[in-house]
Image 1 (spheres, rainbow, N blue to C red):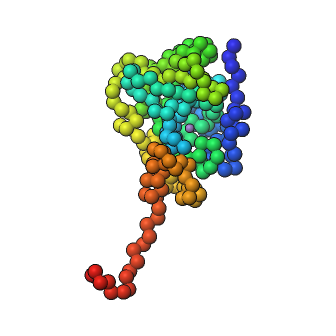
Image 2: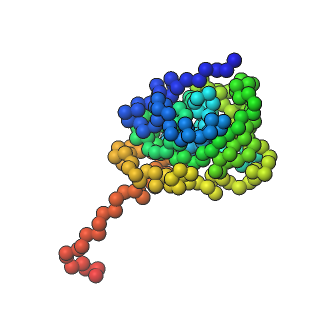
Image 3: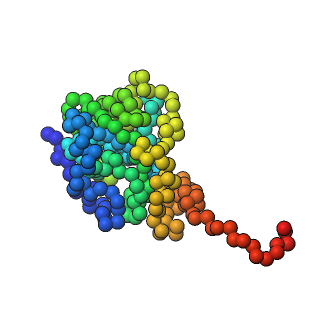
Length: 238
Ligand code: MN
């Protein structure tokens, strides 16, 4: 039996009067325009309280979603922890922007986008806890697998995301080789430059750790430079 997918949890966590994220009530143009036979996938690089990558596969009208702390790897020897999270709306798949506050507050970059091919019956794979699939993205391609672990995070299962050996596998570090957005070509600074929330000057989404350092660097770079004042006084040092 296929599990009924719902956006109830997704909507309950967010305040759409504050967050620019899609509520999932409108059908995005790119979704209705794509060939009906194709399913979309995306990976969003998300600098929130921690940097992570959100991996999403379209299924039954929603995006099945996993948070991957270390991001996907092209190396079949790397087994990347993927924590399943609430299903997201389909029009989330090309979302990029700034979430000022609340759940997931931070910067979201559309890091990869494309289509995916499930292995026959995906419901069976989800139930059994193991399925292979193919990605046709800009950065991620070829054969991949999800394998469920026997433990959960909150109420959701944890999985491993693994690249299969094929012509797209290798030791190239795709995260550092191709760090930018496939939508805008921007880095976090570029996405944030369009308008970062005022309150982040005092309280950015992360203060300590790696993410805290990233915010401090980003916000310092974005601080408007004071125009050099002409010194009307004769300087001793001149
Ligand atoms: Mn996230």
